[in-house]
Length: 193
Ligand SMILES: *[C@@H]1O[C@H](CO)[C@@H](O)[C@H](O)[C@H]1NC(C)=O
Ligand SMILES: *[C@@H]1O[C@H](CO)[C@@H](O)[C@H](O)[C@H]1NC(C)=O
Ligand SMILES: *[C@@H]1O[C@H](CO)[C@@H](O)[C@H](O)[C@H]1NC(C)=O
Ligand SMILES: *[C@@H]1O[C@H](CO)[C@@H](O)[C@H](O)[C@H]1NC(C)=O
Image 1: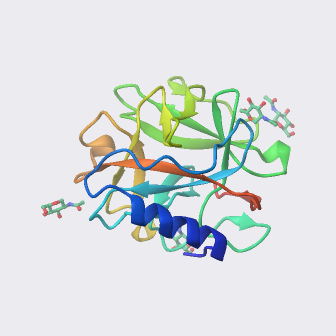
Image 2 (image 1 turned 120 degrees about the vertical axis):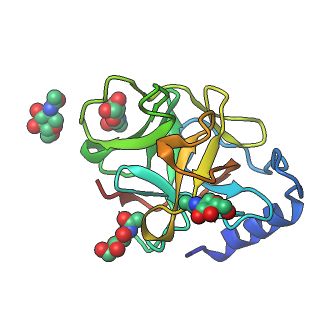
């Protein structure tokens, strides 16, 4: 995974201060405001996905995939987000290709988190509004955090909303804190779809 040294330093601090049990991360030093660009890492001590950067590929979110295969302004294997009007968007300066995250909390959707590109229309039960960061910069959707499930594509774990034990019939899913960190030098990408 590619990180610049400043980010690596802040991640090291985050890792050192992370609680040993599953729980809220320490308050991040930098507040993230509406429109600010940020990345996010999953926090779950003792797991394979402790401090893994969230990636975007194939209309879904992952951690630990070998490559997200995005087309980016410079090399990166993690996704950059921002929140605008309660929507979670993937950062790209190319507006017609803006990529917006949706959540499907219906019985069929099981907490599916995905993204659409440009003006593509939303599925019947897909919601985009409700994303926010807590005071400690945990990314949540209507107050609910995320979980990760092993055995997905490219060695990755797929990201879902918490609440269903086997989302998409995936086994061994584990609740994680999605800890956002502000990126002062965000990298524009168009993610695969
Ligand atoms: C990235 O591309 C490689 C080569 O085509 C593919 O095997 C892999 O599954 C892709 N990863 C993702 C996360 O889409
Ligand atoms: C979506 O965008 C494309 C390209 O900009 C445009 O041709 C098309 O009419 C748009 N469709 C809708 C439903 O807005
Ligand atoms: C990005 O796409 C979303 C969903 O289609 C739309 O609501 C929003 O206005 C778009 N934003 C920009 C900056 O084009
Ligand atoms: C889930 O965990 C069980 C017990 O450890 C294991 O046998 C199974 O292969 C795991 N499944 C996945 C998809 O990781």
